[in-house]
Amino acid sequence: MIFLIQSFSKYTYSGLNFLHSTLINSCKDCDDIMCFLEKMKPNYYLSDHTINDSDISSLRIELIKTNDHSIVHREKFDLCDNIHLTCLNL
Image 1: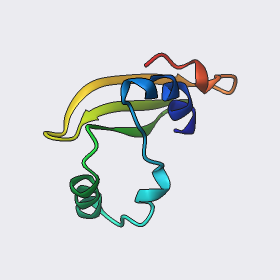
Image 2: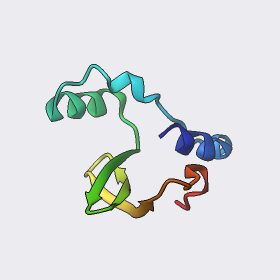
Image 3: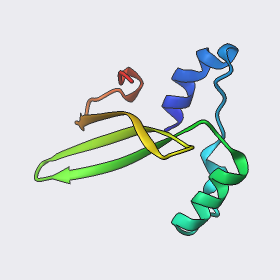
């Protein structure tokens, strides 16, 4: 997800900030992640999930509002060998 952070970095002047994903590496389960979110209090977080259906793999990315964990935006992208992930449109 580094490509997402790099593409969103142009919005930091508007107050959009990112926490590096290595901060949650020590989280072992959902409770640890929830505790982390309560402690750090970000406005939003990203979630990603790889989906493998037959011969096609897809990446689903969700922008989630932290206060109620509602999905603000969701996109699914079919992955192929020649996809350039920095071109994803979020």
